[in-house]
Image (cartoon, rainbow, N blue to C red; front, top):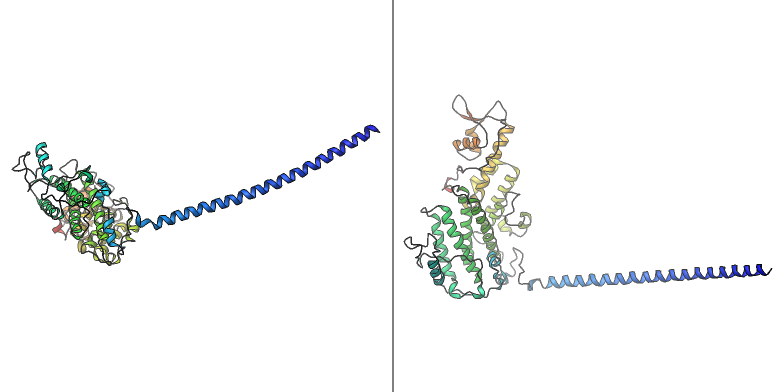
Length: 439
């Protein structure tokens, strides 16, 4: 009996402890749930505060955007043109880090500062155009032109080493007169003008000259690079012509970008400069090939900021039509549009593409033509805007043979399997109707 009583007491105490343990676990679970809810609420509050801080930060940044010295207004915004003139930053500024340049007013009366002229005479560092009577150790103020210096620092630049605007205008006129020189190969002429015009742009930037006169100067310098784009394409005598052509394209895009910035900075009430539409159209023509983006920004984005009067101008309509015909492969409309409407500058940009389209048209006719009916070269030459003799040379360069009928008329047999684009590139062919651009 005693043992049964003890066993019963043990069982009762065990059950009591088990019950207390279950209660303890329940209270602990409730506490954990409460703590978890508290943590979730705290996390939500923390996230909200972080979101609010980020929103306030972004808002403050947007509100202070105009205070940023690197801020640039959108193209076409004419409400703050005066402020834009103070904030404009050209490509030459970026090259020489001229954002830290003090404001300078040049006083050099010559095309080349006296100190540089003397130093280059001593070092025999005179270009062929700067030598007095051909002497590599002697020059004169009428011949020497200031060289471009990449490592220039305006913090230590003297006003006597910087040319004022009137001197820069005279210097540019002198350089551009050399463009038609026949005493030296064009590569030599281009190398000299190429370097000295960069120096002109550098002096304009250091003095923060952004008025209408600087626009006209930039238009002339862009024109130089565009014409050089065509002439260098035709030069095959030099082995390094491809690198020269690349460098010219690089400076063309930089000068064109600076010119666009100057247009926008000096714009009043949505007015358009007289030559602006033509120079804006060059941007479209430079992006004719979708595989190349020489100026970085896509056309779809770029067009959003072009003023409507420019979009509707004949120069821009021409560029957009040529772009559409090129992308569609409509060679007939491509050539007829160029023949009827192209300006000289536009043709200089388009000329490298013309032979590509001609080769494409030959490939299409060769593949789609009826084998028993050869294509008359006299008719094809009219479509491709070239002489019949030049067309025969182009066919042979592309691996296509020509023949003649009983009357002596030249024909292009179709379905030939030997078509290929020449590895050495295309030679220059005249464009019928634009012979005045070929000189």
